Structures are given as structure tokens and as C-alpha cells.
Image 1 (cartoon, rainbow, N blue to C red):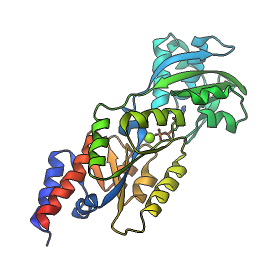
Image 2 (image 1 turned 30 degrees about the vertical axis):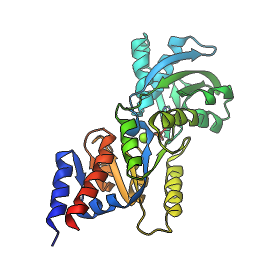
Image 3 (image 1 turned 30 degrees about the horizontal axis):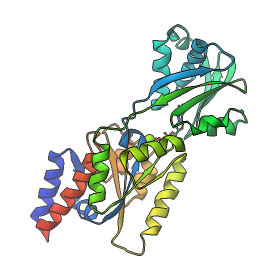
Image 4 (image 1 turned 60 degrees about the vertical axis):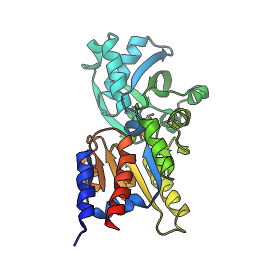
Length: 295
Ligand code: ADP
Ligand code: MG
């Protein structure tokens, strides 16, 4: 029979909006040596806003209109930012009615498709390199997320986009570190942005420019590094978008925000129903408190 303490722990979790899908995960929380977190939507709000647009050889409004037309086929937070910008800056007349065809979303890169008969790309440096479109490499050093646009194989400008760190992210990381846990942040966003966010929230280790499969490799590496101690466990916390494989791989997969994809919610062992990273630390503390009662 399951000791009463476990029910107490699961109940304490649910009162805090933390759903443990079984008492085994309360136990595993007490063995966590590493907590790996996604950046966008987990430690940051995941709400991007365009700060500036730099057109090259095209009118700014036209760049916004064409890029937003392509991005209207994506639900990625950076796509939403570009569309919102086009709407606010007079591009709304054109972008919704533009003919958009053959759009392909390339994970961790961006979009490719035809807008009003023009071959377009909208995405990051990796996307433009993939299609041999040259651009000023200095753009990769700016600590902003950037959506670059190419039209008919030529660089046509970019949008600088910023997200914000969640108000309780710093506290959350501090509390995990106080529990002796190694904190790591992984992201598909560009390295310069990932480094700036990592320093702001205080994680010990961070990696950017990762494709979904690179996140899997990083988690495998971190698990291998602590494998000498069979009791040392690893948790991955993501907001759902593209994170199902790493959530499945982690000893404890955690989904945050309740907005995650069904696949991630299904795969996750622990679900944090609101979007506060401090609940990650609360989950660890509930695990520890439960263990004190049970043992
Ligand atoms: P994260 O790990 O931050 O959640 P993703 O793997 O979702 O990142 O995306 C990584 C990067 O790929 C984004 O930061 C962005 O530069 C680019 N990207 C992805 N989708 C799009 C899109 N629809 N439009 C433009 N860029 C995109
Ligand atoms: Mg994400």
C-alpha cells in the first residue's frame, strides 16, 4: 500500500497547481541532481515583440507585409510578433490578402514559401545559410532574436525581436541551486540571446542555437555525466512547443503553462498548470517534505 505521505504530497502539489502523475515522481524529485530548462516560454514569457525593423532595398512597410504574410502560416511566438508588428504598422491591408503558397516550416530555422509569386524565407541565420543567402554576420552577435527575410534569394532585411524574463525566474533558479541542483538552460534561440538570458536568471550552464535533436543530445550528455551515481536524476522542464522528445527522455519530464502540445502533456510526468518557474522549485520541495513524512 502507498504510505499516506505520498497522498499528502500529491495533494500538496495539486493545491499548488502541480500535478504529479504518480508517487514515484515525488521520490524522483528528491534525487534530482540536474534541472534542465527550456528558455522560451519556460524562463521567459514567450511573448515576443518587434523592437525595430531594418529593411534592405525595400520599403519597411512592404517588408513587414510580405514577411507577415508568410508568418501567418506559423504559430511560433516570433511569427506572432511579426504579424502583430505588420498589423500595427499599416501592413494589415496587404498581408492577409496576399497569396501564400507552398509554405514549409523548418524546425529551429523558420519558414520557406511563395508570397505573391516571390520565393521567400523568414527565419534565423541557420535558415539563410541553408539556402545560401548572404547577410552581415554581425547580426548573429546582437543579443536579440532576429527574423531575417530573404526575397528571391536576396537578403531583404530583418526584425529585432525581444522576449522578457519571467518575474520569478531568478528566484526559481536560486531556490534550485539552494537545493544543490545543477541548473542548465537549453534553447533553439541564438547564442547571444541565450547567454544574456542565462546571465540574467543565473543558470550555471547554457546552450543556444540548438535544433530539437541537439536538445536530445544535450540531455543525453548531461545524463551520461551523472551516470556514475545511479541515484542522480535529471529533470527537463519545457513549455511544450517541440519539447516532447526531451520531456520523454528525462528521468522526470515536466510540462509548464498548460498550453503545451497534447503530446507533451501526455508524455510529461509532472505538469505545472500555471507558467511560474518557481513551481519547479516548489515541486522539489514538496518531494523532499513528502519523503521526510514517508521515511
Ligand atoms: P526555442 O528553443 O527557443 O523554443 P525553437 O526551436 O522553437 O526555439 O526555434 C528556434 C529558432 O528558430 C527561433 O528562435 C527562431 O529564430 C527560428 N524560428 C522558428 N520558427 C520560426 C518562424 N516561424 N519564423 C521565424 N523564425 C523562426
Ligand atoms: Mg520552445
